[in-house]
Image (cartoon, rainbow, N blue to C red):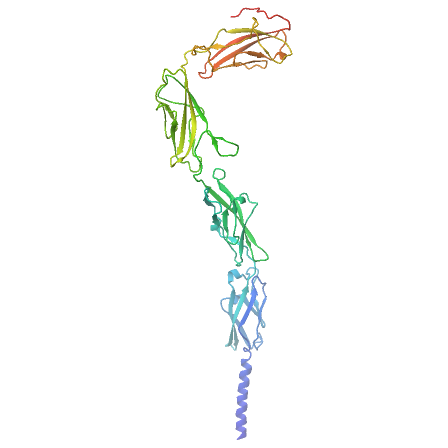
Amino acid sequence: MLRPCRLLIWQVALRLSYHVVTASLCLGGSDIFASIRENSRTGQLISTLSITGEPGGGAIRLCLTGDNADWFYLEGRSIRLNSSASRVLDREVQGSVLIAELTCYEDDVIQSQYRILVEIVNENDNRPNFLQETIQPFTISELTAVNSVVFTVKAVDADGDMITYIIDQSSRDAWFFRIDLPNTGNIVLDKPLDYETRTHLQVMIWAQEANTVEKFNTSAVLTVIIKDGDDQYPHFLPCTPVSPGVPVCMNPTYTTNITRKQQDAVLQFSPGPIRAEDGDRGINTPLIYSILSGGDKGRFEINNRTGEIRLTRPVNDQQLMANFTLSVMVCQANDRLKYSVASVLIRVLSENMFPPVFNRTTFKGFIIQSSSPASIISTYGNQVLQVQVSDDDFPDGRNPNIHYSLHPPSGLYQVTQGGVLIARTDQLHTFARHILQVVARDEESGEEVSASVDIEVLQRGQPGENTSSSK
């Protein structure tokens, strides 16, 4: 009875021993949870296996499978990183976790399977980058209120780092803007804009990591296009600035001359023509012209679109001389409160029927040489030599618009507007003789007449006697 029982026990023990020996080669392991830093070099140890058997001995076979299995390789009881120079482990590309499975075979029979979960630990290996749509050229009105947010920039960091924004104070137009909340990217207008002074601005913005040691950063140059706003008044041309660098004009006075008989004519002015422009050059609002005063009951009419002034009827014949002063206003067609006023002077001239004439063709005079820097030419009758014209268009024959000059100009003589000749006595030589031509010009009609002046330079003490007849 004992022999069969002992045999049975031995057989059971042998069978159990066989199964323990064969199964234990793949047993003893566990799921693998590990971490590794991105950009780690190839062969970096990830984990050591804890299975019973010795891989590579022929008794068991290990196999890596799963989506990310190619990132690992086996070396004995070790699992290592399978990266290369051309294939770098990048958390921003691969994600935060690598997942695979380790299968243990014995005699081609699966004995056990283990999960492999490897966290990729982030490194600060990326710089911030601006979103392109936030740094494109943008337009703001010159009327934008100071202290308002005019635009917002945004940068992202692939590592998820916090970003702060800084205006580069060395950039050309940095003083126009400020950033009140550095983490928002909101750019605030700090100074008023003026389209008439600047139509474009440029400012450099930096995006910088705020929570890292490296403080990686990047920059972008923003172009700001200023849109013209309706904040300027129209002005007449030509524009003379009230002071250098100030875009405010002093309006000109337009002048012209007419005669008593002139009528139904478009007047030509100096400076001219009468024209104005909108102070907002980028808008150029249509303008309207009108005569505020001085129109003399319709005698002068203005084209409200062109500024052209027309004389509609002649000046009253009883008015020997008259001047008209008109106040001309220009205003914006869309806002009559934006206006400017200029003066228009219209001088009425007597009709020019007679030219100016000298009473002789040649005047004779003398000067005594001396050290005096200047002396007046005298006649041989010991009177001041005065060359003058008469004009029968004037009751007394004196035309106030006559201008006297020497032709050609002389370095030794000059003529006053009263027709008196003055010599530089200290530069004259005794017994010299000079013949000058005096030109009288009517500055209104443009008529000119000339006469000769024959001058002798006498020695001190020599009597000034007329040695030749006058014509």
